[in-house]
Structures are given as C-alpha cells and as structure tokens.
Image 1: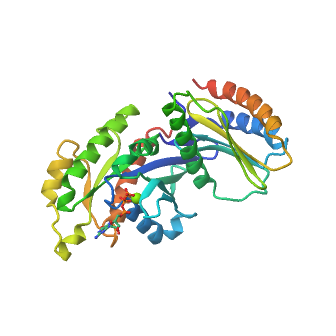
Image 2: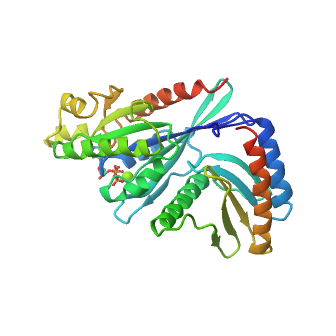
Image 3: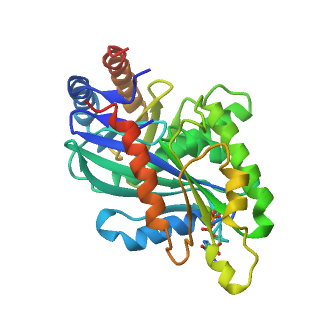
Length: 201
Length: 133
Ligand SMILES: Nc1nc2c(ncn2[C@@H]2O[C@H](COP(=O)(O)OP(=O)(O)OP(=O)(O)O)[C@@H](O)[C@H]2O)c(=O)[nH]1
Ligand SMILES: [Mg+2]
C-alpha cells in the first residue's frame, strides 16, 4: 500500500520486480540505475551473495516528478528468485503497489516461470491481495538470446502460459541491452499511479 | 483500514511528540516507518545526513527478518532490537502491527533512559494515530 503524506505532499509507491531465479530482475534495476541518473538521488542498495545472486532485495528509489501537486517517489525493489528464498521474497512483497513479473524467455525456463507466477499468486493471497487486482506488467526477458542461437520461447507460448487469464500489458525485453526496460517501467508506474490517484483528492 | 494516509494535523502532532520526547533528550534522529519500508516522518537534530529512503527500506527488511525468525522459534516477537556501534546506536520499537519507531543516538545517552522515553513516545503516538480509525 502506498503511503501518502498530506503534509509534505509526498506519495511513496512500492513497485516490486518478481520472477524466477536469474531471470534478470536485478539487471533491470541496474539498467534503470545507469540510464536515469538524473531521476535517482541515491545509490542502489543490493543485498546479495558473493555470487551476485539477490539474497534479500535490491532497492532503487526513483523520482517521478509531480502529479496534482504531489511528489511521487517510486521505490523499486527486486525479490530474490531462488526457490529457497520464499520467506524473504514474501517479506519484500509487503505493502506492494505494483508488480513487474519478469519471465525468463529461455526455453528451458518454461516450468520455472509458471511455478514462480503461481507462487506470486499464493504470496499475494497471504497479504489478502489478489494477482488479478494488483497493477501488474509482464516482461518476457532475454529475447536477445535468439540472436545467439539459444532457444527462446515464442511470445505466443509465454502469453499462453503466463498471461492468458491475467491479460495484463506485456513486453518482450532484454534487460542486458536495455530493450524495453524503460517501456516496462513506464507502464507499471502509470498503471500503479492511476490506481493510487483515486486516493488523492 | 486507512493507515496509508495521514493528515497534516496528525503528522504535526506526531512530530511534536518526537521532538519533545526524543530529540530534546539528545537523540540524533527519530524515524517512523511502516512495515513496507515507507517513511511516515523523520525528525533529526539536522546534523546527520544520509540516505533516509534506503535506510527505511533496509530497516523494514531488518525488522521483518527478525520478526520472522522469532515466529520460527515460537516467539511472538523479539521486543528489543538494538544495534550498537562505536559512536552511534540504533534502536527499533514496534508502535503497532504497521508502524516502527527507529531512533539513532550517540554514546551520551544510556539505553535504559532511551527506552523509557521511547515507551512514552509510543504511547502518545498511538493515541494520535488511532484518532483516524
Ligand atoms: N542474454 C541476456 N542475459 C541476461 C538478461 N538479463 C539478465 N541476464 C543475465 O542473467 C543473469 C542473471 O541476472 P540477474 O539480473 O542477476 O537475475 P535475477 O533475476 O536478479 O536473479 P536472482 O537475484 O537470483 O533472483 C546475469 O548473468 C545477467 O547478465 C538479458 O536480457 N539477456
Ligand atoms: Mg537479483
């Protein structure tokens, strides 16, 4: 749940990048951190293992400017994708306003994407949130691998697997080259802010 | 539930409590955050300068982790969370299920004395906060 400060006119919005291990969540935030320096006033915080896997979360505050006189502060988080970290994954989801589900488009990751999405559904239920109601954007990441001869799932298959019931906006992307990283971010911010705007009088 | 929105009047009352009970005592900084890592309000002695948003995200994560560990070992909570440093210390207190009060203070304040004041401040903050329900 976003936090709205009527005195200082600040709205804090929490957006979480969710998805299976090594799908590219941290890479999304790293790209945003490099590309939008003027909108980021501080260092990215990464709680990770020696092997660069996310242990708890990455955190990147992103300044969006004003809406209706309110300063919008977007707080970007990633969850740790490894299966064993579901307890911490859940903690990061606390109070979430909008979610980017990052799927790994590599063929061999098909099952992992589905399992991760199902677990997101369960984890949200634990907070009495619904995956069908919360602002959500799908990102089919690593499409650049096609060009390197690595088998990548067709978008139609990813859509069928992950988005046939949810019917949320989706992007193919390459977090490593930056392709559609900003488009994904813009979409989730606008969906989330629209749902919050209703609370701003 | 309406904890996501706080009025100007409530915030001013809460800031006044933090100033009277904690800043005047000599703490460097008193922050109220929610469990999602949002900042509700910050009061400091205007000497400290660091990234408060990152701090809040980490503090919420830290508290949530310890809370989850408590439940794992069958405790309802570990009521005292305290980090001691060379020159500064951090003290965490739960205000209610959604809010945390974090105070940072130096060597010249004893933990016992600080805790007394924190408890009083929390009592008063709760009264202000509950008015909105
Ligand atoms: N080719 C390619 N590689 C990518 C892309 N995005 C991420 N990677 C690589 O995939 C690996 C894992 O990326 P991370 O961003 O750390 O993945 P993560 O989702 O944060 O992983 P966890 O923290 O374990 O959940 C790294 O080696 C990245 O360089 C992409 O779009 N294309
Ligand atoms: Mg990561």
